[in-house]
Image (spheres, rainbow, N blue to C red):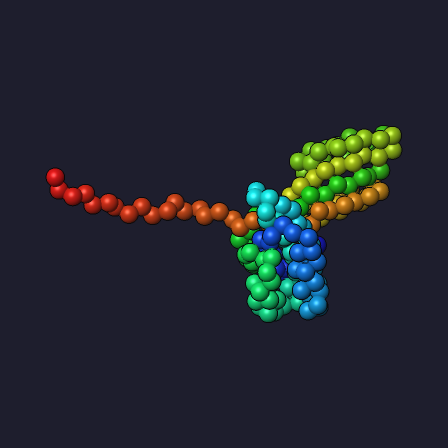
Length: 177
């Protein structure tokens, strides 16, 4: 998700069964589409899982894959979300070298990015940060000069943005008494 790469975000509700992940991901792979990010987890209903798949827009058009996803038995619902119409978040854990003279700078950076210090060692610090992918990219850029030891990102998860306008109320006519 780095830079200005355009991407398609698919939110796919599937039955929570063995082999569904490989079937859905395989559909993209067989068509030569580059999966940038893939995250899967159970939903509020344990019978279902939600897959968030981010596909590089250069692989477009995706209409055929969308049609074929709908045909897969374990797929319940397929929704493509435009990044402007989605709440996107990603989680990153990063371990950075932290000599005693740099610890206050690293801690201040973590505070600015609303990140949390998760672990502290003699020579390094592990930080957790969550947010939009560009926020994580910026944090990575600023931590790089200190020396990144390890870095792991979860991949993007997304839900559609909620409506901002109240529903229109219809007037109810009452019958004369």
